[in-house]
Length: 356
Image 1: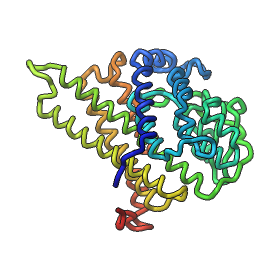
Image 2: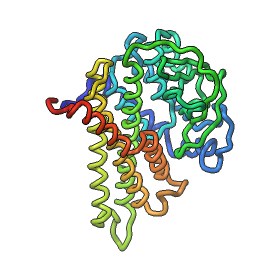
Image 3: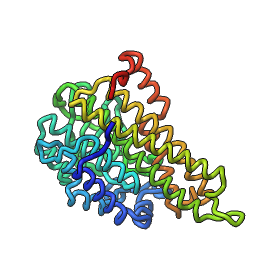
C-alpha cells in the first residue's frame, strides 16, 4: 500500500513541525506546568490557568492549520484523515497542549449537522471547541471543556451543541495534566446527522489518538537514543551496551508498527467515503492495539534508559512518559483493541483477505 502524500499535505505537516520546534520549548512547557501541573492541581478553571499553549495555538490558527483540515465545503483543503494524522503526529512530537483534534472533529460534525457558521468559527479558531464522546453518563469527562466556547456532544439521537458558558465544568487532573473537566448541564436539543456520521467521528478520534501517540513515542525514542549516546558509564556510552541497544532497536520497530498501522487506518477511513465498514473498523482497532502496546513499552524504555532523570520534573523525558500513558488510557488499552478486532473477525471474517 502506498502511503505517500501530496505536496500540500507534506508542506502543512512540515510547517506544523517547524512552528512546534520553535515555540513548544522545554521552557514554555515548564511555564505551563507552573499553571496546572504537578503540585498546582488546585488552579482555577479559566484559560489563564489551563495547561494550554496559547502562543502555539494562535500561530496554528494564523497559519490556517485548523481551517485546512476542515470540511472542503467551508474552505478545507481536502487533505483527508491522512492529512489530519500527519499533523497530529507533529503535535505529539513536541507534546503540544493545543485543542486541534477537537477543532477538526467539531468542524466536521457541525457542518454535517447543518451549522455551517459555527463550523466555520471553529475551523478559523474564533471559537475553541470540545467534543464529548457520548452522553451516557451524567457528567462525562471532556478534554478541553474548561476553556471551550462550544461543546459538541454526540448521542444516539444526534448532535447536541452547547455554549461553554451554559454548562458547569469541574476541572479534573488527567495523568498528563492536560486540560479536561467533568461537564454537567442540559445538553440541549439534538440535531439529526446523516447515517454513519457519528460512527465515522468515533473512528476519526481513535486515529487522531493513535497519530498523536506515534509522534510522542517517535520523539521519545529519538531523545532516549541521543541520551544513550552521551551518557557514559564504565568509560563508554551506555548505548554501546547490548541490553540498552537492544531495547532501543525494539523501540524502533515499535515506532514503525505504530506508523504503518496508523497510516493504514487513516487510509481506510479516507477510502470508505464516510461509510466505515469492517475493513475500516479492523484497521482502526489494529492501529489502536499498536499505539497502546508499543506506547506502553516505549514509555518505560525511555524512563529506564534515562535512569533517575527519566522521571525528574526538571528534564523533558517525564512529559513523554506521561503523554504516552495518557494516550494509552484514552485509547482504552491494548486488550480492548484486541477485543474489538476479534469482534470484526468473528462477524465479518478477515476484512483484508482480498485487499491489495
